[in-house]
Image (cartoon, rainbow, N blue to C red):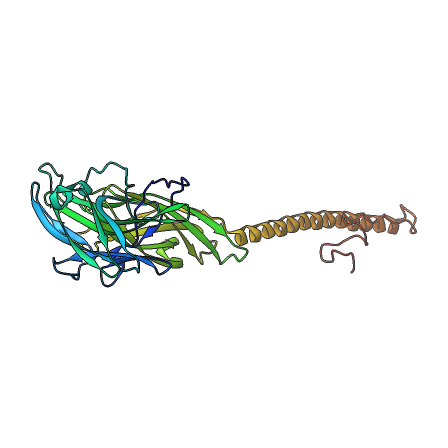
Length: 382
């Protein structure tokens, strides 16, 4: 995980600030941090056993209030030019993307970064090194008597400034420092909010659900987490792809908003998006005891367009059938009246009451064309 170390300096020729990304020592298998520019300037820093490099990727301590610790940092000039390195410590925080960041050089240092001092009680050391040379830098960590229990994070920074044209370039690398003060340790990583939005697709059996949730380290121990994100349907049926994601370490008090798309979620009306969290600690971190696990879910609706279309078609069919039944009933009634009138006319004709040539007028059908309809033959054919 990278460490960001920033500075605000003004060059003599132009007020330009160049901010470089510093690589964290823990991101390298050797535990060293290095930076290069045009293969001519390079700096490296790593924990030391007092003689040379050791196998640590970061400084991790457990120290009681008022305790004094001593350790060493190995600084190297890995470039091809002589360089003067500034070594100092500052406080750490989580950046917006979750990276391990360090305060600006001119920012006030109030936590673990303020507990680190170098030879003679200095807060900043200037170390000139020839190409390929290295130096072990002893330092101390003095925990205040009123230090609160939990994890306190900082970083030891190596800074080298050099002029490139009219710009003053500040190259930096840093290594993490963790100090755990024993006492009431509270590992607490929570899901403080969860929102879900369904994104339909033309294919009714496809689509996606976007989950946005906020995580908060409400305790006093630095924690990462393994996340499981998915969507269930009725009766707990799994819908779409279940996502698994590793959450990088969050320092105490930090928050982070995460957005994840779960694909392959069809339009099944009821959706139950969820997030499950199991806290973890870094492999090099001190064990704080039982770690929390939590989950959160919500409900959203994926309107089934295909079902709405079928319902609309069914409604149209029903309306057409209803109209047809009414039309057939009207035709049948008219036909019955016609046949009754025809039978009456014939009976009267046989008695001589009416001329035999007279006949009743067939009833008009309710349809737009064709002969009168009969109950058994709607089109009027017998």
